[in-house]
Image (cartoon, rainbow, N blue to C red):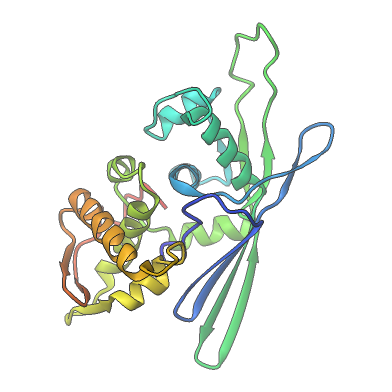
Length: 266
C-alpha cells in the first residue's frame, strides 16, 4: 500500500487500478446491508480514506488484535484521527461516514511479477463490519461503537510488514492525499536505499503517482503537484534525505520516521 495507493479523488466507476513497475493494485467497490437492502458503496478515495485505513492498521498493531473498535460517535472517531468534527455537505462528518462505509465494503487484489513467477493475491481487508443505529434519546455510547474485524490473512500480513510512520506527521498531511502517498513511500523506502543513492526520473514517478493527471500538460501538472507534496512530506520527515533535480529526485539512505520497534502507523 506504500507503493500502490488508493484513488485520490472520487471515481465514476466501481473499479480502480494502479500499477508500479511489476506490481499492480485493483480495488473493487462493494455493498453493505443496511437492515433492509444491500446498498452499493463507492470506491474509497482521498485523505479521509487513508486516515481511516491508517487508524484501523494502527489500532490492530498496537493492540495486537484483528478486532478494531471505533469511537462512539463520528466526532470521537475523527478526534482519534486528529480531525475535527464539522457538518454540512462537505464537512468531515459526512466524508468520514462515506469513506468508512466504502472502506468496509471494498475488495483489493494485488498482482506481482518476480522474474518468471506471476502472483495474484485477492484480499478483503475487513472481514466483518458492525455499526449501530443510534436511537433518539440514547445517552450511553459504550455499546454503540462500530467495530471492524480484519481478515486473518490481512492481519497476519500487517503484523509482519507494517511500515512505522510518525502519527503526528500523518495528521499534519491529512489535507492532501498525494502528500500522504509521498510520505508513506519515503517511510517505506528510504531506510532500504543502498549506499549508492537511487535516482527516480519524473517519468517513473508519473507512472507510480500520476494516474489521476490527464490532458495536454499532464506531466507538467504532475511534476508541479508532486514537488509541492514532496516538500510537505519532507517538512514532517526532517531526517529524510531527498534531492529534487531537474530530471527527477535522488533518494539517499535515511533513518525511518520512527524506530520499527515502536510502530505507530501501518
